[in-house]
Image (cartoon, helix red, strand yellow):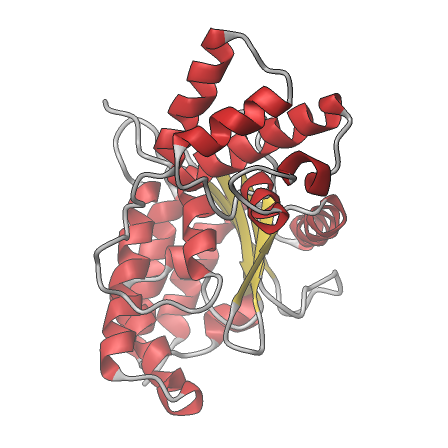
Length: 290
């Protein structure tokens, strides 16, 4: 099976290597960029994985400044730069995205494991198409979005879901489902029953762990969504949350990653065991009425 293209992961990986090489050379970002064919702002964004150099020559002159002379190492980093500059899977779809969404999608597509929680809804990666459409329609007059935006967003969400069931290397997902969110009716009883059934089927998959945080419990529950993306291969674990300003916030700062991990661990400790999930979902499906 061919490897999935992961330009964002390549940019993050290249940025980490370049930052390490700069530190080994004893240079600040300003000193490293001085007199080269790019400014320090560009180098800073390259090091954090937000962009790649426009030309391989820019990377080569930076490596020369860092004292990297080994041809194999230079060629490897140039090849990594080339991969980092390729197109992501969603490029060309025409989808209009929220600020920060492309960065999030790139990191998510490179993740080996994702841990998620949402306080008011089923997490997006686990939603059925009907549930996602109804949820977007509910928010449409508030966010003043268009029908075209809703359709594009739902299709993008369904495309992201394919990572859970792809052949060979499905992504691992560990989700804490908040019982009040599961009981919050989106789109009507039929749509909710379909969503419950889809969750029960996912819960049976080897790569998916679903736990329910009970409504009657006294344990910790986060007030906002939690998304922890574990990349592996020496890349930093990254966290994401939606903001009240209709943007997507993504960071790999250790302090924020640690905070999100503690939040998730606390909810896992208060949640019911995974073996109880399917039974509770079937119960909710029987209880719901129009």
